Image (cartoon, rainbow, N blue to C red; front, side, top):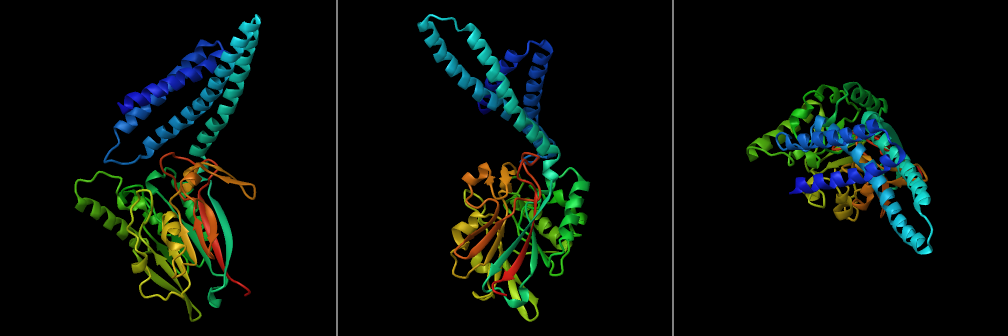
Length: 406
């Protein structure tokens, strides 16, 4: 029944949008091309979704089919909105002209063609943007740099730099050269420490097999620290047994160890400099809205003082709002990811920062400050679902810690 409703809706949108094409051209070749593309995209999507293996969310091929579907379907929805609005105006205008006793045919015809042209022109913008996002935008890495000041930062750490990456989603990659460029870009920042905030894979630890050697080249004087994200647990895969799922998670943990990363599972490590220290605290995934809540702050801070300067790694930014920002133990800086900025939005520094994800997450991209505590929500290194990015580019964050009045 769900497939029937989906296909029916798709066809109705297609037929309605086709009216705009018919208004501006009489070419049977263009009509045939329109129908062929519509049917081919629908057939490919149904085939991919019906043949997903092992309960995966989407593999690389399926993501591309989904991406093409989005790139074709969303512009049609925009056309439908314009055409439906014009039909409403057309209906009432026609009634008025009949009452007035005048002919509406020339007026209606020219108006219809004008609206159809505008609708198709505007629809071309998201069409081109979504295609660009699939083939260029997803690897358009940006280095974003911030300097944050703290009253209680130990003097020895004034000027300390950290690089944060998040949401690698290695199972989605399809260009080794581009990913290698980004890994080198991370190392070029020459930060004191590298911090990864979860979602190394989409579902399976095996996804890292071809990328393990590359990501093991990440290095910093104080090392690489990491935590788990919701996708790392394999909860979106159909397993033969709980034991098989547990083995997958253990393999993922072992891979991080083999890469030289320090995986923090509700635990902490000190970083020392000139006899002073700060704590890196890592919790397992904890999120609202039905996401896994394996994170345990109490366990994670065992053995460290409430007055110690703390950098918390927590994958889901909803954890900061729900438990962290008002915690009396004072987590001065929290680093998260998870949202990807929805991989779609508009960002013009100092003017606008918008994405549909803002209506679900209060903290969805960039630096936020409340009660004297900070959180940075990284826009993500990789991608998932739609195999691209439009306006919200893959991010490498560099944060310099500064002591106030230093």
